Length: 120
Image (cartoon, rainbow, N blue to C red):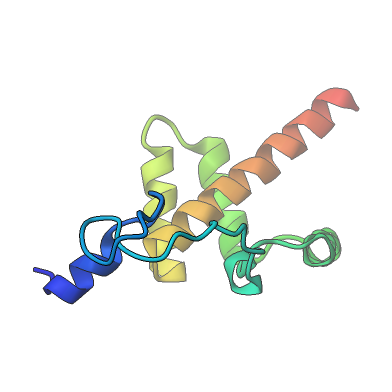
């Protein structure tokens, strides 16, 4: 449960203020300003430079042994391949989010390899 002071913070202040000291929209009448996006809001976003570095590193170093095993599971796997890959990745990486991201990443690598083979 929230305290009353916290509940006040949860309310959105999008409605115009009335200029009256009491009531729902109390306060001095002011114009809502458009605020610039804080740098902290873009934390974790993949930049161009980082993406390029990772791509080059993947190209040069290739896949790690556990990633190769995941790729093999995807290639040979049947109906429950996704689940098995997820469980294996989760065991290796430690969290659900990382495991799902790794599974999608290796799937993308596999599809890229298949597209390359089909084109060549």
